[in-house]
Length: 225
Ligand code: HEC
Ligand code: HEC
Image (cartoon, rainbow, N blue to C red; front, side):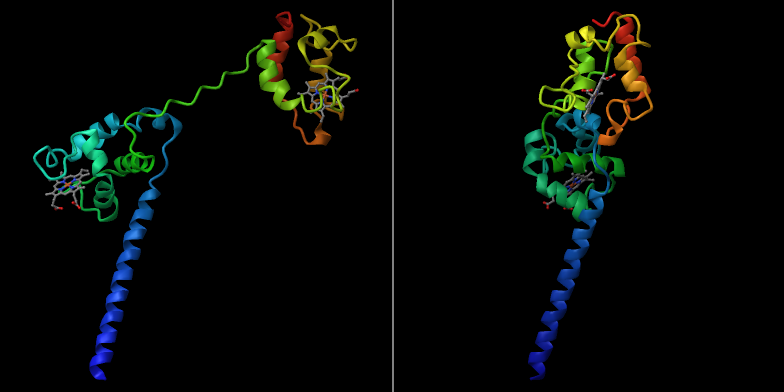
């Protein structure tokens, strides 16, 4: 009886120790994830093998992990093949680099690179958004389409007021008077402070920013082309 209960408590203790160990490992992996994300620019310039290798593998590993050792970290293919071991020794067990360390910045880069699948090349940078400029096309795509078209279309509440260039120039409401922004109905509608302001406050829209209206003014002053 005594023997059995002693055996049982040994098993229990062993179980406790290994589950503690497991939590500790998991926690350290979680902590590392808090090194932070990479921003889009870093993604475009640093998340590739060449950069990571020059910063980390060549700088901190290949003195020991050259082609002669059991884990070779000198080429993309061999790094790829050892990825889970690298992740484990650097982030979980934290035994590598032996006799050295990675800065938190280096860990952040390596962690993020592995997280997205350790790509050979960086993903293409996101297309830069074109800024608003004083042409009708630019004003249409930046302002009219996202903020006005829901109402100013043939089936919308603002259907009597067309906001295409021809309609603006030919409107009996004198919405656009080339060379005269102050008296153009469009500018008046955007700048007024009462409940007739466009886009309408009562529908939950906020006023266009002064610098945006300034570009529309510029477009009108330049002849509304
Ligand atoms: C000073 C020498 C040295 C440096 C620098 C070094 N390592 Fe190691 N590494 C070793 C030795 C020795 C072993 C094998 C014995 C051991 O695990 O201690 C090893 C083992 C490994 C293993 C295999 C572990 C396994 O489970 O088989 C990996 C993966 C590894 N290192 C990754 C790295 C990475 C990544 C770096 C750089 C950030 C690095 N090492 C830097 C000496 C080094
Ligand atoms: C929620 C619907 C709605 C949105 C969004 C909206 N409008 Fe209007 N707009 C109207 C309505 C309704 C009228 C009045 C039409 C009428 O009188 O028949 C109007 C009238 C106008 C007029 C004529 C003003 C006048 O003096 O009579 C202009 C110019 C105008 N809108 C421009 C815009 C612009 C530019 C935007 C986007 C920045 C915009 N609107 C967004 C509903 C909207």
